[in-house]
Length: 324
Image (tube, rainbow, N blue to C red; front, side, top):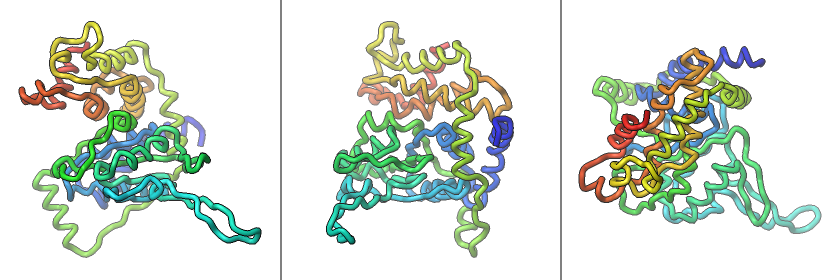
């Protein structure tokens, strides 16, 4: 498929994917689009939501639409790094005994890390190399992961007993923190109706892993003006209280701000939105549209913000007003 054909396919992919996913998922259009943007740029997603909001079903359905190899890991307090990456096992062979590497469930194209905050930091760290380098290292040997490779991790923000806070280094590896909220009443009625009736339609594949790689390559060719890049950088930098010239409310309410990776994610994601909008260039509006999922897990508010009832969403809204 040449670049023009790839562009035409990607431009119309959004509606086709929504239509196909509607066979399994009711509503959640904004959530689906944010995850799609991450996939089309090669990013990873942290999905935050209460139990029973179809997080697992959504990820599995997306894997089916793109015909990706899917694995799910249920994170628990006793999960060890080797349970994820795999391990060397002594086995008998024609030439005697030898160590053979047995791949773990991380060797998939789409990995669902379910309730990632329920496992200790040592096991959480096993994902860091995979998410950033697309490889794992076991006993000094490096093993490349399949391509494309995505980590979609879920966490439950309600029940915090027995959970481990994700370190900032790992949070920064997630392109987006996607919030799944409760559905409107009409959509919830439809969910209950579907799930208490005989099985309906199944999700069919629309694209292949080769298509995903072609989409990712195309997205990076979308031009971005220096002004738009500078806006993304300024938006990220304005959240850092230690920098000279930071807004007063940032100095007062923030412990730690977003790093350079935030601006990179803003620009990359905006390129996908520009293609979907039928334009050959990125506008500042696309940067603004992605500010919440990109920044909400990269900015750490302090106790003053908590005392004043300032939420991260309200803080980002004010940041968007301040940075022109």
